[in-house]
Image 1 (spheres, one colour):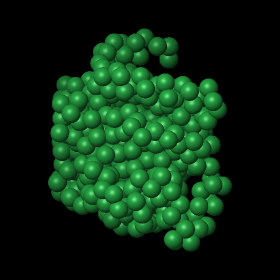
Image 2 (cartoon, one colour):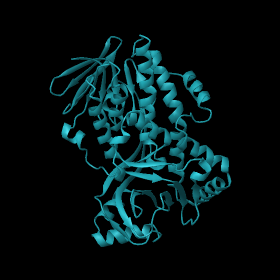
Image 3 (cartoon, helix red, strand yellow):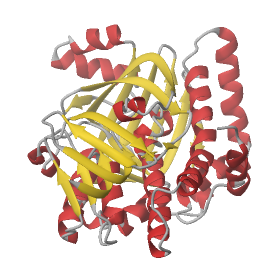
Image 4 (cartoon, one colour):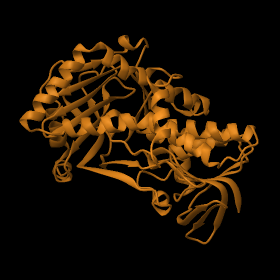
Length: 411
């Protein structure tokens, strides 16, 4: 079978990319190893996605937002960063951003279901999702791209796009090296009810020996708790009975939320950062986590995924309108430069923050306190951070300069 574009992976980013191209006339195949029933009604994986204003706008543009139920959306009004036993912490307030809120929190499975439903609502005959498709072989060269499935089916395409996770097998198969950073920790995700309302404020709490995050959900007394520990420590926590588990989580938050009660299953994920040396090769491009696998401390993973969808889809549609090849190296190189400029600085900064605030040695503790204290005093710094969260149509400051620099880098 021959297609214009073959996408590997029908996660939220892969489906959003297909939706962005729906109606263009391009024939798009999305290959997914899971069955269609899972795509139509995905399992709750425990992850809550913090959406920026730009991501919120893109989900509207792609037709997803009307398919997300209100109970799966929470307001992210403010955010606070705490270190050790801080009481005050560093507050990122919506008042300084000029917006009514910093963003939204939406369940990952709700976004994935909405992407599926948006594709069905579009009735996009040019987009086909092929389920139960386990990829066995990929290749791409000057003559085209080809994917062979484990059952022998083959798909030929003008352009191959990988959206198959930060551990992308297609990226590896086509020889794109990536920097992997294993933080030696795992994160536990669990929804908890608590006595004290969250007031739509998220917490990132770097306690000594552990990191805690509190993500406010739709109900004022329910949050998603993210706890980062070693795998052995998490195993010991999960071995506790229900009452002991609840008491342990409440204690980790110093009782600031009152009594807490688990209301969901627990999910575990390893903490691994991934950044490839480039986001494309001949007739091949990376999007989503296959392009940038972020540490969750800044909650930017899916936002970067949507940026990759927007940057690549815009160029493809523009090339189509002007009768140019959708796989041209210049197009892919421009995509690479834009997405690298948008993601590389924050990826490096996130890595630095995760390392610094995971270090409990006395010099690191002193530096941690100094950094948060400086942030409290530096309003321009806080506004710069919030600019990237709350401006849906603007590039980050110095964005043009960063893109120019990325084009000049050795390849």
